[in-house]
Amino acid sequence: MRGIQWLLLIFPVAILSEIFHWGDLIIFLTSAVAIIPLAGLLGQATEALAEKTGPRIGGLLNASLGNAAELIITVIAIRAGRLELVKASIIGSILGNILLVLGLSILLGGLKHGLQKFDRSHAGLDATMTILAVIALSVPSMFNAAIEPDTLRVEELSLTTAGVILLIYVLSVIYALRGRNMVEHQVGASIAPTHTGPHWSTRRALIILGVSVVGIAVMSEFLVGSVEAVTTTLGLSEFFVGIIIVPLIGNIAEHLVAVQVALKDQMDLSLSIALGSSLQIALFVAPALVFISLLFGYYLTLNSITSS
Picture 1 (cartoon, one colour):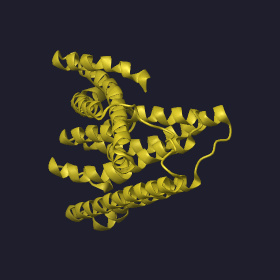
Picture 2 (cartoon, rainbow, N blue to C red):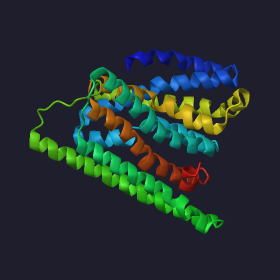
Picture 3 (cartoon, rainbow, N blue to C red):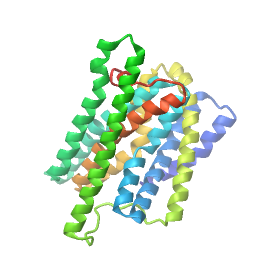
Picture 4 (cartoon, one colour):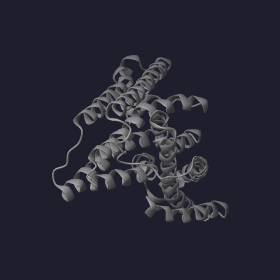
């Protein structure tokens, strides 16, 4: 993680490029690169707070802020009316974690250690939740043909489905926290966790968390504001930028951790990071954005996401 922190030097460059109008391409590239270390610091601050607050509140923090960087980027994009970018980024995040990150972790971990093992029960739970999330997200698309062109009913179906998905997410978090507490009660609290965040004080973690959120929000403004000009200049579609570039810059720090722990033969943690991030996008970020879009006067339906 420390290897990418030097990229913070790009942050003032991005601000200067916006102030002095050095060109949309430079603004886009510098702001995209600057988000990477900020997202990493945000994740580290969350882990440090989780370590201080204990397993119950800490688990809730990790579940809520695990994809905060991408949530900030997509909210900024919704405010700018870039719904195509938002839809593509949701799809790209889910596919990227399941296919790219998980696949790379298994490949590199297997090449280094040979046969690797993981807890079947945890992996089975994540797999079941993934299937459930896909089915839930597909419901609006499956019934869309029957109720179009009644846009009101399409929107009502999407909002209802989003509410149910959020409820499933809350129940899954409660189940995971209760399960963790039960295991700790049975085996004792003396067992050290396989992965902990940096040993920061609560004050330092909160300050870094706040600064990271503000920094990501500012860089996201620059990034989203330059998307149209960049896509025109480079001949890229907005969908391509959303499905490839946005998920990478928002989650690359987390992706590196998943691969690193796989190389350390900690496949349980690697699977948890890759699948857990996808589940947070599908069960929390996607339905939350449906309701958030209403605050800005837009209608981001789950049907438009799954049919992209």
